[in-house]
Every structure is written in structure tokens, then in C-alpha cells.
Length: 167
Image: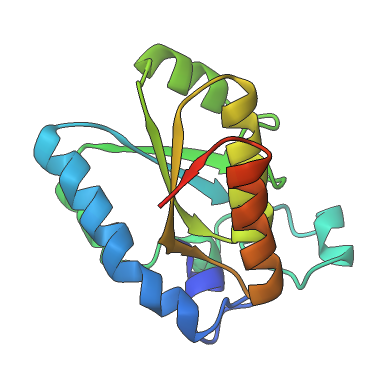
């Protein structure tokens, strides 16, 4: 839920549908805060010369405004101490990060997933979660992409191939 994906003028904006998922994302964050549970934010944080920029526009460069959480979420993060930020430079939230250790230590019975982009970061992170035998729920109204055909395909893959619950 970073500026470059959610804001309409973001470098890799998911368009109007990105704004449409913000209320559900905030609702899910609120539920976790109320229960005193941590919320993990898996965030792109690219080097300026990242090879990914041969496939996609330059986006979410570490330290830039585009790589920050959107203001609505940033406000929540500042208000509470529930946030765990995981910075990543590839599609999967597990690649060269400490996400595996964080989730293993939390030992959740359920991992709920919202965010962007459904067919890229969400899909590959959900794949890794399912490969580690976590119960995963993906909220179809809490994920989106700049490519809606790929978004629909990814939701189906997560449900039928990976075994995630898509609700």
C-alpha cells in the first residue's frame, strides 16, 4: 500500500481500483490493532538501478516518497506500535528478507493478505506462505493490480493451485 502503487500519479499506479481497496485494508488494520496483534507491511524498497526496472517503470525507490505507505496507513502506523515493516526488492516478501523468521516467531494460525499487486507481490508471497503450510486468506476486495486480467487469474491460482482461501 505504497504511494507509487496506490496514488493515481504513482509511478506504477494500480489506478482507481487501488483507491477502492483502501477502506477494507484500513478495516483489517483496525481489527488487528483492536486485538493488539501485529500487522506486517511487506514493502518494495528498490535500489535506483534495480534490474526490475527493465520490466517495470522505476518505482518505490528506497527513501523516496513513492516508497512510503499511503498517508491513511502511515497515520495508523504513527499512532500505534503494531507495525512490522519488511523491506523487499523482489516479488516475494520472503526473498532475502526476514519475513520467514517474523512469521515463524509469531506462529499465526492464520495469515490474512491484502494489498497490491495481486498478480505479482501478493501472488508470490502467498505462494511462499502456502508452501510453508500456513493457512492463508486473501481478501478479493482488498487486493488489486494495474492489470485486471492478471488480477483475476492470480486470484484463481491462489485458490485452486496454492490452496489459499479467497473470500
